[in-house]
Amino acid sequence: MDEDIERILFHTATIQARIDEIAARITEDYRDKELTVVAVLTGALMFTADLLRRIPLPLKVDFISVASYHGATETSGEVKFDQLSLPDIEGRHVLVVDDILDSGLTLDAITRRFYNECRPLSVGICVLLSKRKVRSKQIAAEYVGFEIEDEFVVGYGLDYQERYRNLPFVGVLKQSLI
Ligand code: IMP
Ligand code: MG
Image (tube, rainbow, N blue to C red; front, side, top):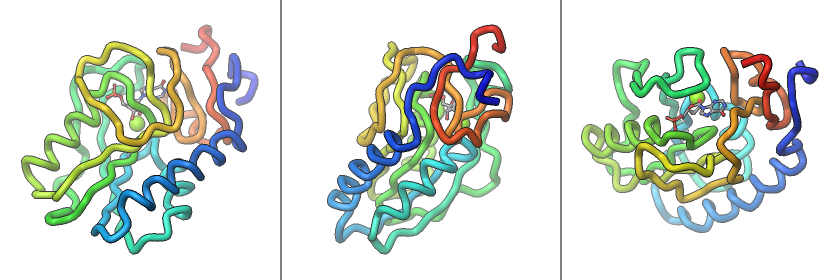
C-alpha cells in the first residue's frame, strides 16, 4: 500500500499533536453545553475516535452516512443520505466531524438538513483537512486540522475507491493510480 503513495503530507505524530490542540479548543468552547458529536462515515472514523478520547466532556456521539463521490476523485454534485432517520439532536449543540472539506457540498447538505429538520441549538463543523480552493458552497469549518492544496489525498480514514483508509498517515496518491 505504501508504494502507492507519492508523498506523505502528515505523519501520525503530526496528526496526533494537532488533534491535541483542536480537542483542547473544543473542550473549552463546549464546556457547560449539551454537546452531540456527529461523525460523518466512513472517512471521519479515525479522526473522530482520536478526537473524542481527548474531549473530557459528557458528550453524546452519533453517526451519519452520506455519499457524494461514487468512486471518483471529484464530487458527483449530489449528496445521498444513507439512513432513514436523522440523529436525535433537538435542543443540543452539534459538532459535525468529517475527514475533509473539499467542495463543501457534503457539509452544506448536512448542516442544512440538521437545521431544517432536527431543531439543534447550533451546528459547528470540525474537519481534519481543508482544501485551499474556491468552493461551490460557501461553508467554513470552526475547527480545521490542516489546510492542504487542492490534490487528492488518502489515509487516516480517507479513501480512494474504499482503499487506503487504514494508512496511519495522510499522503498524496500517485497520479498514475487515479
Ligand atoms: P465535498 O462534499 O466535496 O466537500 O467532499 C466531502 C467528501 O469527499 C469527504 O468527506 C471525503 O469523503 C471526500 N473527499 C474529498 N476530497 C477527498 C480527497 O482528497 N481524498 C479522499 N476523499 C476526499
Ligand atoms: Mg467521506
